[in-house]
Image (cartoon, rainbow, N blue to C red; front, top):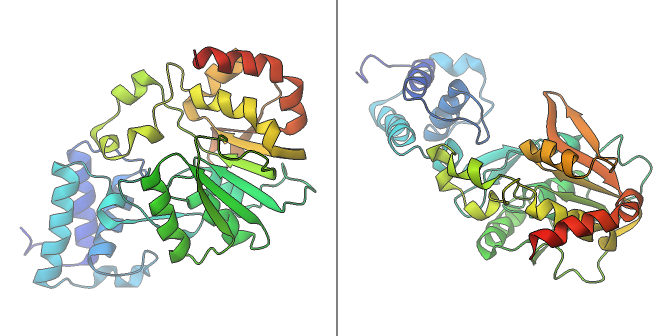
Length: 306
């Protein structure tokens, strides 16, 4: 069979066909079989991810064919996400090391980082920014990369995730990033920021239990968040005012739990952000609105902690 496959394009097409036939789940960095097959082929051949199409007709030698097919086999038989097979994921135009210590970077917040968080940040001058639940460090490090004058803290409860974030900080020379271990804001007493960005766990118990096999490779700590997916988000909304400067901005991703949050807090003026591909369950809210509605938010958060 491998004798019939000769070129880079041959292997990409073959991989995509195998992935689709096997009913794989996509969504870890790439959302379709062709892109995942391309990622795996280029990785096996030690070629750049943005390789010119002119090289599509380049032929593979026998050793290269074997490496590509071995990666395809693992993707199909083990259901390992492609980003974990390659050890790399692209986020906000930057290459991050990725492995099972943290979720694969894939948040739509990347688009906000590249646009400078406008128009929501407006004229707010940011000196300090916080990435809460930093995982691999992708949001914190990308913010620091695009805004070298910001001091950025990346916080996570997982020592393993923080170790990976530290490797990414070194990989991308992000000297203006500080990494801290904390259960949300618990270890941040007295710390204040003009901007807090967070992509916390927001998947419901039922949804986690029903996820495709690919998600079993990711740490469940980064996914599971209660019956409605809001256990952590409500704590963040309650405690953020203590750590936001006057006029400060909170950006938070809650994904499919958006509807549950709006039902719980219909009076809170969440600004749901539209991305290039539509609404993605990410909201912006200012400190003043959180203070105004603090009592009700605190009541709901306390119910989750009993």
